[in-house]
Amino acid sequence: MVPIEIYSTPSCPFCLAAKRLLVSKGATWTEVDVAAEPERRQEMMRRSGRPTVPQIWITGRHVGGFDDLAVLDATGELDRMLDRG
Image (tube, rainbow, N blue to C red; front, top):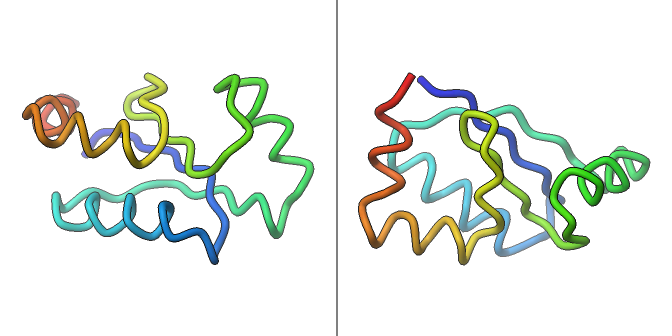
């Protein structure tokens, strides 16, 4: 499976939706909880240029948040990205 990284918080509904979508694809990921590790939010912002969660990377490519992930899914690009490895 391709490497996926998600910066999230436990109470974020968009984070939960992104993880549900990825679970439906059989994907696994490494998660950074920026609520538990607030200093990592700065790292996320440096990497993504965005202050909001979730922020998602697939195979090192920043794909954005849940809305961006949903667009990738709707266009079939997410399946192509997850098939690579």
